[in-house]
Length: 247
Image 1 (cartoon, rainbow, N blue to C red):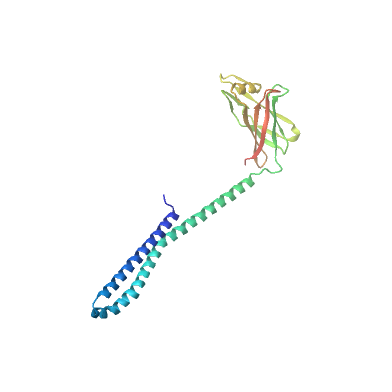
Image 2: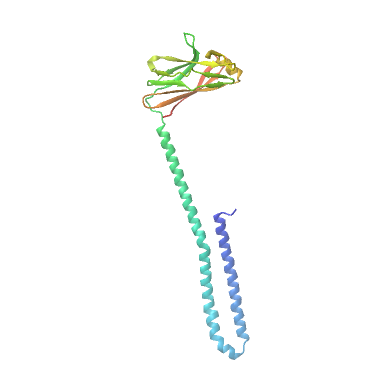
């Protein structure tokens, strides 16, 4: 496949070949005429001397140069137009990329976390004083509303959920909140979140990802984190906590 630059080189080379061939042909033609003139009788030479001088010495070279100039202009004109078209397309592509970059930067700025916001943080997977097992969370920021956890989460052949419950709110002064959990086993039997570590071990899972959803009066947020299976303590550890503005 030959690109635009290759086509331009080919046309330029072709132009030079035509010019050289034309020059050689024109030279041979003029030489032939002069040889014929030199070998003609004196009376013939006298009659045609002026004609040969004008045609071969002036008209033929001028005509040749005019034709060659027109040929060069015709061959180079499409290449020039094509090159201009490529430059315009390249400029348009750069403009489109710049606009996309500016749009992405604007979107990033719009999704930056505000300074004043709720900050829901997962503390641990534990048991409450009244015997429920689940995720302990705490708010370190402004009041949080409509708190829930994405569910269900597959644990091998079992399924972890949080009863589909949404908690109305949590403030800094409320302290810790337990989000009660439930595990449905493969045989349809249900158990508490206390069995989560064992189910992760059976499924050969080192960690699972959980996402808490909540908001304030104006925006919505998520806190995503990993719950890692450990071999000491209560067996589960919270890590890689990150908050994101989603609307």
